[in-house]
Length: 84
Image (cartoon, rainbow, N blue to C red; front, side):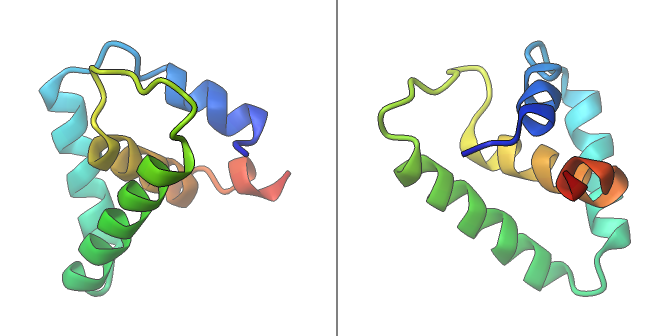
């Protein structure tokens, strides 16, 4: 299940705009050494979340791939989220 800090960081994206999504995606791609590998990781995470969270009603505004991208950027840029 999601850590409380990670859960809170996800909900700060409740009202997303496309500029934020693009900036976060560019940040993720700039940090990655292999663009293909990071793209596959995002896709697998989005797919896994989709099947793991069947009981939870997904937020219709945030698609799984966008949510996975934002989570991965937060994990890379804010390692204290994972540390706890």
